[in-house]
Length: 118
Length: 114
Image 1 (spheres, each protein chain N blue to C red):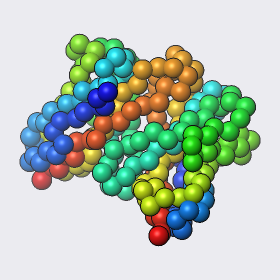
Image 2: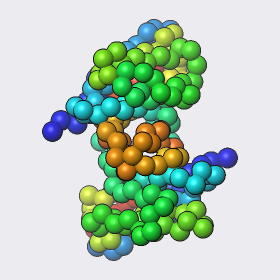
Image 3: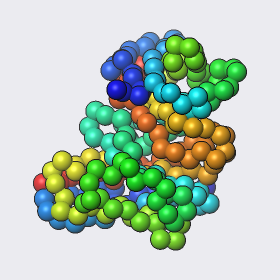
């Protein structure tokens, strides 16, 4: 069974509008961390935002926020005020086990290609 | 400061040949990860090192794949008897710990096996 599911292969958004990229996850571990990465056409993975499973508040980083719904096992990324430079692949990822001592591997979804229209 | 670097950026080889891919992590990062990304897919975990030792190599697809990190810094991913199915982008990442422990990725090595 897939551990990370991203159901939107591609999304379009008008410049300056907000967009939500969906991510659901599956784990039986009570401790886990959720990540979003951006991969532009250059290929490098850029870390955007992190949410820990015990975090009480939704994570925010500038124009990025994470809509974390633990009971539904979803961790959607919201990008506000889209810019042309936001056009890229976006990957949701999970690491099971969290905290300072956790250095396990990330499990990635298949990604969503976001295109921002001028 | 310098990010994660990977060399070569591109490698073309023939089926059956041996290749080495190098990763230079961010200075001071104790953990180092290798992933493989096929076209249209997310990265898939191969192996990760904590210091010099392989803490988890469960993602290596078979015994043709091997990785080392002898001094706890630079790592080399080695692929023997390459097959066309090994063609992919090989990504390296490093991390230093902390509660987020986010991984910082290099630009990748695109391997093409003819």
